[in-house]
Image (cartoon, rainbow, N blue to C red; front, top):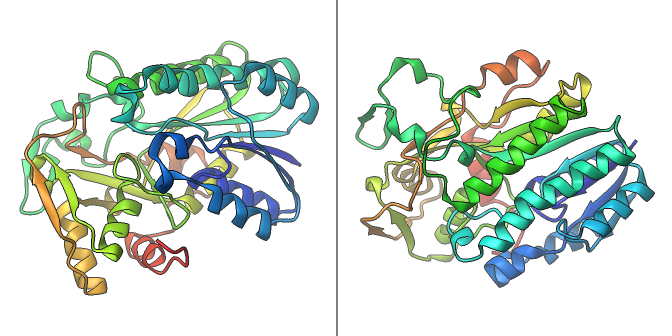
Length: 347
């Protein structure tokens, strides 16, 4: 099988590269290292590309930006992949406001370039689109909440298992990032529903793992653990540090992609996260690092939430478990914290 992975030097993309290379598939990686431009040296993924080249056998890298329409069309026409894993994105909620053209052109137009290339040249390929829970905007904040000692949680029993795929995505504040990703999400659905392409849309929560180049503007746990190891001061933005996110390991993300490919449903949407079991607040993360590793994370509190930020979000995984046969979360928060703490990369 031939697999094309965009954002191949990033967290999910690199996990996909290693996974498919291990299966002896031919893997074509597409990554322009835009993170170095977006986030500076800490976002640079060159180290990860070097790692991939060293540990893989049938991996070919293309320094190609998904905004390059002619380049994308040409590559897919020539390569004719059997599977496309689209992870490339401008990923920051906050950065989008300062670079709106880069954000929209990468997230929405770049996705259109890939979808149309697939329709023209490989209409039978399985296309996995990595979306985000930010397509829901801040609408989850309208759910009644209960304040607990270390976290916020949903007070409405209808959301006891988290946010479902049927939750509305309009009439809310998204951030420009959320808007551009919502556009790409709808485009991907439409190429599945209208054209019948085997496109699956995965709305990720906090995706994490040791290959994550976390920065303050993106990559909650990776950046948080980096602050703990380097004794940096972590900044908490609003909600008393009790805001909640669910976390899923990159390994379980790729397992979900494979499960979808076994029985692809054109235009299907899935909320991809760790669920309530793998949810954690910032205050709880601070306590976990202290208890598990003996490190006190220094922090300062900024009494102003990021605009459009979620107070509490964790994914309802019931649809994932029902439709993606054999899939479930296998990496617990304990696994995730320990693996990221022990990661060999020099922070």
